[in-house]
Length: 313
Image (cartoon, rainbow, N blue to C red; front, side):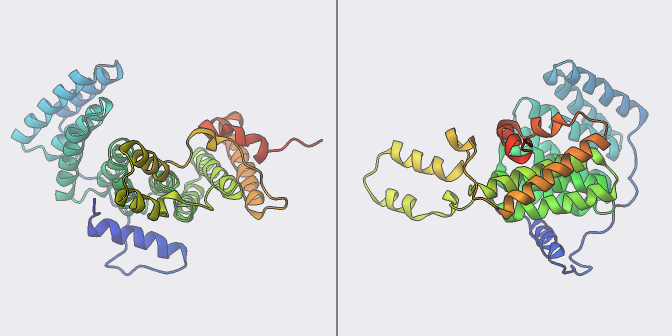
């Protein structure tokens, strides 16, 4: 799916900013301004009640109530209330993996917030659309998280969250250079926001990225190898062979790929990874967290902890 022009410009601005360039006023995002109008008390109370149902595990009832509230708010010309109800309806629909209906509600909320240029809420909805993309349509995620970052400039904490999300998407689609770029943006924002928890999350992500670079995971990118697929399409290969080849291009870390690989002695990438890991531990301690959270945040790659933090004899 093609990204909107604004999304492409946002991502381009992110890239050149890290290279020391500046976007023009027409291309750069404006600083986050004050939040727009708030919902009426009745609509807010109804949304709170719906979210309580969601918390209790009844996302279906929550969705129904939220859509009813959106209709009531629309009838009362309560734009803020309608947008809030639609936004949260998107959340509850996504709970049940109803991708199409969820996306529709998020986009309706986005359009309503645009009427008042409420950049804080626009950033929140765009970020949630990025999260939606990770579950439903991964190729949209880069655009939505980039758009969220454009709305969130001026709010370092929120900007850092979206930049970290963007880095994770690039990591998942096997684009390490861009993952590193987004993570660096997130780290700068987290430091400006004096948010040690966010710093720990970003630093752990950077440690994992760089240890995988050190292991050579990115030396061969199956996503860039079109020839084998083209050859299979032109041959008499069976459907099973073609599907296996396609799977190899869309998933890097299947099966034993999650196991550590030998790293050349004196690897600069490993030294970088270990420095990020050390800093993640320091950030966790500063936040009052158990440092073990850094390892656990690596998920199925937590077996890299011994590589990242070797025990001294």
